[in-house]
Length: 98
Length: 98
Length: 98
Image (cartoon, rainbow over all chains, first blue to last red):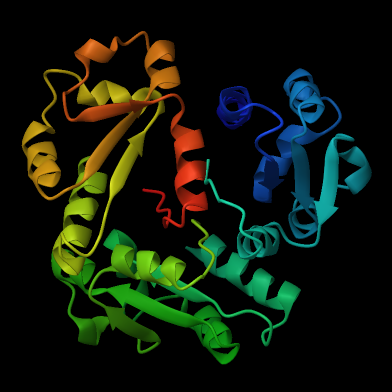
């Protein structure tokens, strides 16, 4: 996850924050890494400041028995992470698998 | 593979079977999981009933020394799995890497 | 990496070298596999002859402390591998994650 976040920062730096719009969609067990006590907070703060959006899959949260309130405030919620990836590509967004 | 199939079922449920068309393209050693005695049959049955299509890479079957007749009847065959992924994206399909 | 290169060769064979244009974008530690003494040279030679392009991420090289001059001559350089993947998709290229 650290590598994925670093890659996102690199892309934002490379293209310039005003030239690229990035959403990180997270589903599955990976969501556990973004609870209140997450060590990723500084990097998430930095990326959010640069316009990156974070989305969490509600179905995965349910499956992980994680309450939305436990997740870092950086996250918005989507009903399904994979559906979100499909919708975004249909809107013309590029897709990168970490 | 179980996770991939479950993810597909989730997307179909989330968007509704009449609102999304899904193809699962399988190549490489993963095809071994879909022989006659596969434990995935109930889930494949369910997904097929919801309109999901399953495609197997003929090149991979050859490389795995697997005969087409050994594969579950749920599968159609394409000459190359990766070529199929390229063609579909060129037709406007979204791509999800499991 | 051997599998990825073999998959590319399969696609070129399947679709025909004049019908498909393929770029392999490499970032991260994977670049280490393409230094001067790489065992992948014969396959890279073959693929280059069939029109495949190889691109290396400069940011990753820096991070791996690898000098561009150490990389096989098959490679061109891009400032960021992930940015390249985004740009290409925006130009209509399909994306395959190995």
